[in-house]
Amino acid sequence: MDVEAEIKEQLTGHFGVDEEQVRPEATLAELGMDSLAFMELLVILEQRAGVAVAEHLSDINPSTTLAETVSRLETVLAAAHGATRTAAGHGTGKAPTGAPAREARGGRLGGAP
Image 1 (cartoon, rainbow, N blue to C red):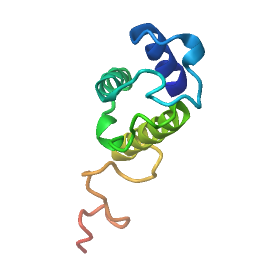
Image 2: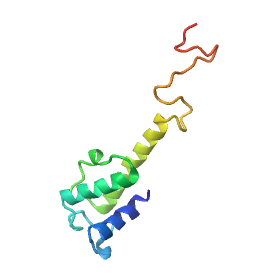
Image 3: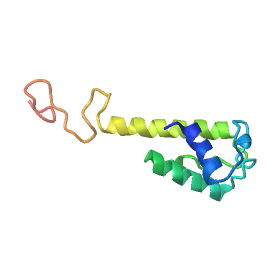
């Protein structure tokens, strides 16, 4: 997901923010985003990304810039997708979480001789 493009699309389309106002240095307050509107934006982004993000962004406030918000969201989404891939065993070279690891000799479980 292109976080910046998605946020810009939501701000202009859903929230009616003038496109010229949507600049990286603009604060959420300058964009007319109070805490309720910001939570609504997060719900929309969570639905699109399939990842819960609101609980990780509690420190974002009206004086946070759009660039800072985008950066934080990208970090949270990347971490969530990385955790999902790791939990599924993708790209780690390890068995998925919860799967038994087999000992190299004899294929025994739990390291029993």
